[in-house]
Image 1: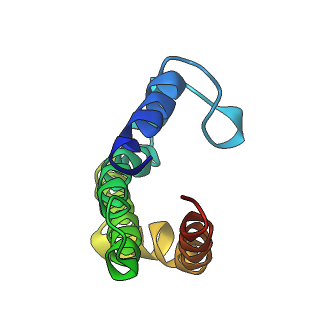
Image 2: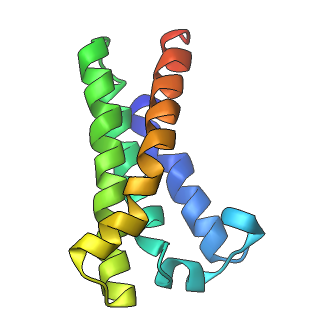
Length: 120
């Protein structure tokens, strides 16, 4: 959806906040945004905007950079909120909220890039 990618992601967050069970394990409600994972969900919105802008360009380097920056934004927002909501320091928040997810996110980012390259 390129620059419009922010629309479905925002709707996802809004619908989940309003009670539709779309978040992990079928949970919903404003409490999810206020809980430890809320920062990651908010980060999705900003990441969708950045990645969408990057995919408005044909350059593979810009697209790959967009995916990497988008993932970094999700981590940044998530770790920031994790630190605030749980009262953790930076190192424990990164150790629990980033490091375990890097391998899977690399695979997902690569897969998204390969699939998107095949789209018109």
